[in-house]
Length: 139
Image 1 (spheres, one colour):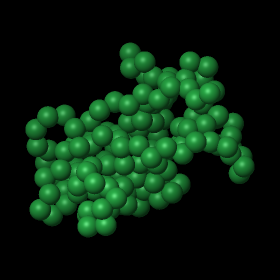
Image 2 (image 1 turned 135 degrees about the horizontal axis):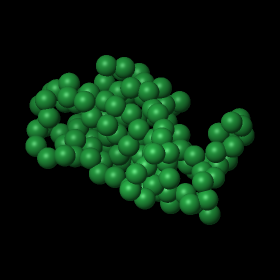
Image 3 (image 1 turned 30 degrees about the horizontal axis):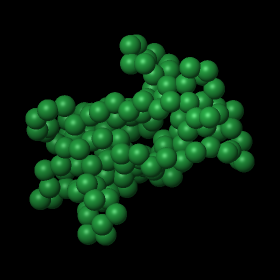
């Protein structure tokens, strides 16, 4: 996306999974918005958008995550997505978004002893500029 968005404008955040064996699943966990690209700096303004279970904390800003196997020509086999409303931090022109994303065998997400990989990924909302990220099968 190019240009400046209006506060409240609707955006879609997507996580793409490419798993040709169709055995993996994705669970988006906690998502955070930051006012600077340096997420680890304690002076960087931040806002938690979803809890550790992926449920929205601020439903006016971010909605529940959904998934689709209708991936068209993206190369992905699964797309997990949510809608959110554009917002900004005071005195900042850009918003940076990160989410912890859990990738593992679909059957393991049903189990309390799930052995999955938790990845901290930037969802690439630098100034609300969307980029697609495709994850390949893990061995």
